[in-house]
Image (spheres, one colour):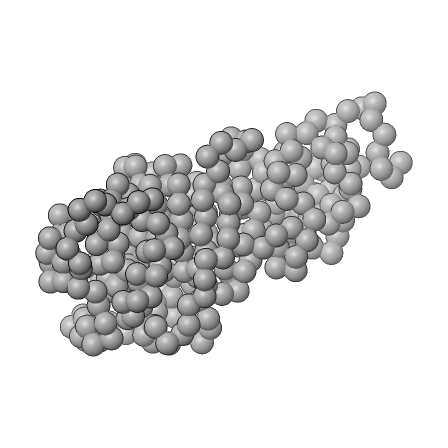
Length: 299
């Protein structure tokens, strides 16, 4: 997305000193329970926003804004920023932080105090992008929840644990390919967009972080409402990775033979394991109807 012809004045982003100042003011001690690690490096903030291609016509949703490092950067380039924060202290301070560091952008910030996993679609109108440093402990469920309830989101750029980033962007057949890989790919093209070191956070986490970008499929071969049929198949296929699909899906279909019949109808070898199937295969399987005249692979 192109930058605006008349960009807004640069926002005064937060550095290490300001992060500590705000934390002391609020009496905030970052907790592992909430997955709180605050970014204090302005260059990292602008790198994240650049990787997301945020522009002047975007309505960006940010989850877990914390002390506002990324929020300020988003307000520098986006038309509107809606943040979802579960911590009432942090949510209450954020408008004051914006008024302090970017008064010209204060009117473009909207704050929702809520658990992101309980957010309803009617609470935010027309978001176009999701950009966030996601809480590590709930990153995948939150990501999938927002992709499901906001079809208007066309781009995602999230920072997660490096291991989670690898799983989200994994290709079929790889050791890291699994449930998160398939479910993310159901919504869009997923790729790694970089690695973030520990030193840009306060406190420093014990692990590296990774950036993941998702570009929603503009015209997929399936309807996004198909997830109710597709996702249970994905869960079942990977519940016991070492099993063949015939065995792994036997509980879902009621018997191993019924699973085999559905797989054959979808043109999938029942002897394969779930890690060999792309999202398109799972969609095809969800829509398959066994042909009573068709021979199975193992009969």
